[in-house]
Amino acid sequence: MAERLEPKRLKKADRRRQILLELRLKPHVRVSELAIQFGVTTETVRRDMKELNDAGLLNRAHGGASTAAPALHRDMDERRLERVAERERLGRFAARLVSDGDTIMVDAGTTTMEFARALAFEQRRITAITNSLPVAMMLGQNPAASVRLSPGTYMREEAAVVGPETCEYLGRYNVDACFLGAAGLSEAGVTEAVEGFDAIKRAMMCQSSARRFLIDSGKFGRSHLCRVAQCDEIGTLITDARPAGPLADALRQTGTEVLVTPTNAADVDVKDHSFAGTR
Amino acid sequence: MAERLEPKRLKKADRRRQILLELRLKPHVRVSELAIQFGVTTETVRRDMKELNDAGLLNRAHGGASTAAPALHRDMDERRLERVAERERLGRFAARLVSDGDTIMVDAGTTTMEFARALAFEQRRITAITNSLPVAMMLGQNPAASVRLSPGTYMREEAAVVGPETCEYLGRYNVDACFLGAAGLSEAGVTEAVEGFDAIKRAMMCQSSARRFLIDSGKFGRSHLCRVAQCDEIGTLITDARPAGPLADALRQTGTEVLVTPTNAADVDVKDHSFAGTR
DNA sequence: ACCGAAATTTGGGATATGCAACATATGTCG
DNA sequence: CGACATATGTTGCATATCCCAAATTTCGGT
Image 1 (cartoon, chains in turn cyan, orange, brown, purple):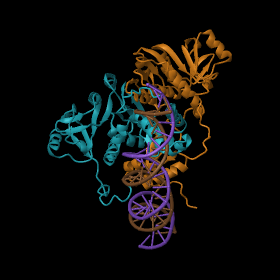
Image 2: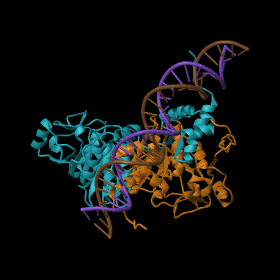
Image 3: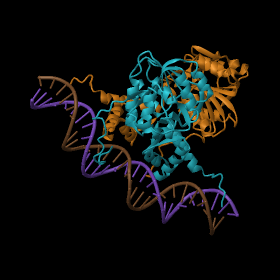
Image 4: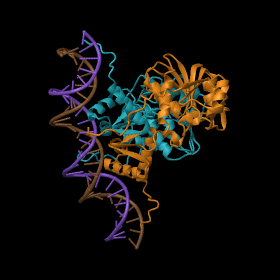
């Protein structure tokens, strides 16, 4: 039982420092190049990168690494790769609901992120208020858009701000519509898993003439800790598949407007054949 | 000659725009991820990337691509690439001035970004308030740090928020120190070029017990439109070279504390192209 | 000098990526 | 309509990279 608390080895630390230094100059370094430069094996560089990656000091990539600077958290990146097609259609479809001159609120999440992307694409003159940093940056790509960010404590996993300050700030604005995501939708209503997000969603709902919930069908029937809204409080549900069962009943009873993204039969998956190709 | 002025195809142009948009949010994208996201083959993404790479709009990497001009500040000072080493030392040096439990304010800019990077590296338990999205994300990588973001209108070029809301918000907090960048420093004082940033810097100064200005020597003698502070209002100047001439006189007269980063010859990298053998 | 832990190298099989040639749409223009 | 150009998908194969585990070296401490 040797208690090695302070490994005084310098070589490893030197390499790591050099890697980070290199990343300041160029946004991307290759494992192979660094291996040659340091005179070590690629395995060693790989191990260094793994440590640096785990420490959050850089972003690992296939064959190399890139700067950790303005990156999203890993969870978010992974989540973005699930149900991409659905969310993309969903976002694009929802973006069509926004007209020139509209004022909107957008909350944080992977789905609303897709919405923001689609919205930034159509260069509309809008005013948007959000608590999500990626959404703000995305919408800010459109020079015609005016984007406001709410204050609050930064939450790494979602790259958004939360807290009472956020809600209080949102309460000072009135907008035409809010576009909200959610973690679950069942006959009991809309629910959210992330602590603190429920309050923000409710705050945004209060200040909006129209309420738009962007929820893909994978969330149907699921419910989480915090309830955001009962079914009769949902204004418009934008989703990718028509609800069924008790959820459909509840929505119909409350007169909730349900918009389903058009499913082009041609667009539906053809991925049944073989996985021989890279896809 | 084919008259290919405007290929009407939207799909390809769409993808390329999306790729570039994506690269503004994160420094690196993967071929495989984009293929999934777009619903196309990796080959297609590869072809897109090749074009964009040939056009100089991104840097191709094995398995993906990275930003051509690193970070989101393409519009900012072009010489930032040359002064990277200085700013890196500057940021690291300034980060040592922060102790566990401190509360600080950090404003937007490339220099303060370096500071944030260095500060995130040392995992101190601090509370930070900033108006810069990249700084917030950077500091947020440290789980022990509590980060607050100020509200305001989003400014794309700086990836920060500005405006009266921002200043009003900052006025509600009192912190131990503020760490500010600047565009110019002369005997007339600290000046800033970006409209609206001067007010934020002043607001941060008002709420801080200690004022730390991070200004590299390249800014000496330069002055811009907005004056942020007179020389007697600068608490501590952190820079990479000892000022001279009238600026030095002014600083001495006002009793400004000047900290110069130690220029350790040992600290300078060994990045010579001195490697001979393979491996 | 010896021992032991950490660091590194080595080797090999599994994947991922790149590339080029060809096949299949899809739209354009005469 | 049909030839043609462009865009994208598919396939096969060469490389590059990854990951794992064992062998080897390095280095600090006694």
